Image 1 (cartoon, rainbow, N blue to C red):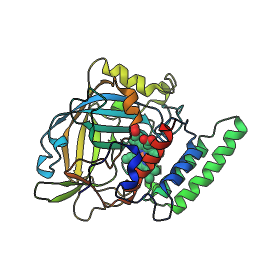
Image 2: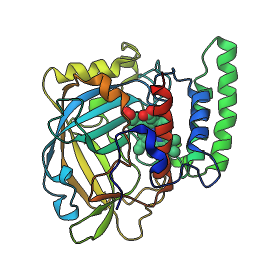
Image 3: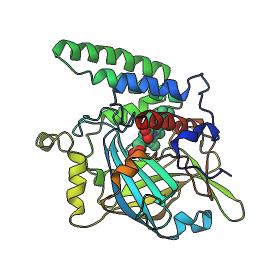
Image 4: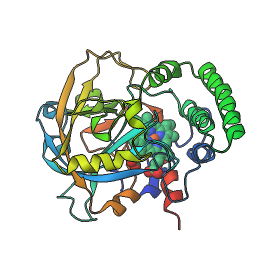
Length: 341
Ligand code: HEM
């Protein structure tokens, strides 16, 4: 059983899972490379720099209760959600294809004070499988994307695009598992809104019931409004940071709802590798609905916190996926740096 996770970003060294990859990259080195590629501002997240935090309510369906003892999945509770553009560059363009994030904290109590504690986090993004089976593959890709986004005059941008083409070729040769994710990425337009995007947790976790029976699963957050891609002509009329304003204005007419769906694994489905999809016909259990209601009045507080995919309630455990364990350490390094005076 996972020990209870602290709310502090500083104590990842005490947590299970290694902060060094099998190939010897430390979490600090991973964040150094992200910084060099994405140029985050000092007090921003090293990835997913621009985001906004919203209040929400989780209303369970009861359908997951037989699989887990996790009280936060079977009782109604307050939640906060941070929606983000995945780039480490705070000025990243929402009209361009790329990563979008949805990170959820299930709270104890009503969430009306800064003392509210997160009992479990969900951290998800708008793709169906992860690009890489190890952190090195992901960091290589972040570097390639950083080169492709080189700013400056015509010559600088052309040089950046050329360097990116070479780097992408290397990534594909060294990390062939990235091909599927990159192909589907290239075939998509940017999401039209945070409210009309599906976000997947990608890693496997384990539900544990009251008899100790363990069932691996993956989660996804499915928008009730359906999935909508941006119309490229319409995109030209939008501000480069339109996504937050779009969600704010939708919320003036009522809540925006996502269904929290658990996909249950069969015995031979890989749990250690988020770059391998499970068959789509695996059972999909709607665990509950997240109703996003309004911008959080305690936004400054929640912006400082880490949304940590390994913060899990008793009744849910991490799988054998080493990248999942490594993420916690990388997020902790990012938080230490962004919260430093
Ligand atoms: C080795 C793999 C990965 C590394 C090194 C990595 C790195 C990071 C870092 C450094 C941050 C900023 C954390 C902070 O300052 O609080 C971050 C945020 C985030 N990452 Fe990852 N990440 C990885 C994999 C993933 C995967 C697989 C997903 C999707 C399932 C994901 C989704 C997110 C999201 C949504 C956020 C923003 C959370 C928030 O709003 O606070 N990341 N990532």
